[in-house]
Image 1 (cartoon, helix red, strand yellow):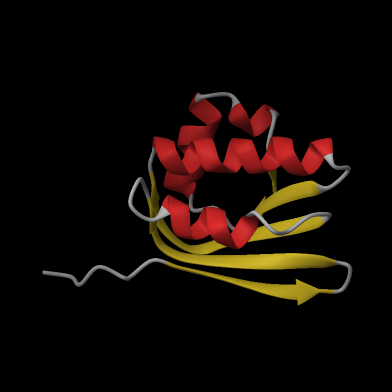
Image 2: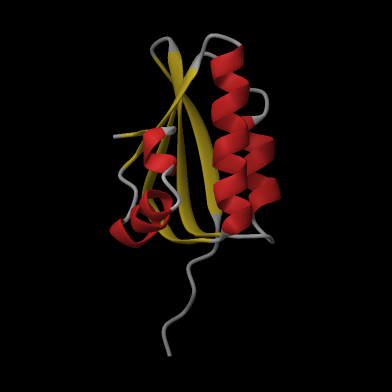
Length: 102
């Protein structure tokens, strides 16, 4: 049996913006940790999802809320390196038309 990778969200300044790297599963239990990491950020924020293994509806909701909050303030959320399984869910929901996927 494969051990589950614990969820982690790490923010670092990158020029004029921020990069938030996530690892593990983004779900109802872990979304509050990512939310507390994203909430104080504004401007250009890149969410590096290369370590993400799973995302449920609570995670998707958090991405949409953060996208809307940043856009309202003149910023932008770019979602980078999203695994194909997670990306496919966003495509089925037509959120790839709204969110900035890199």
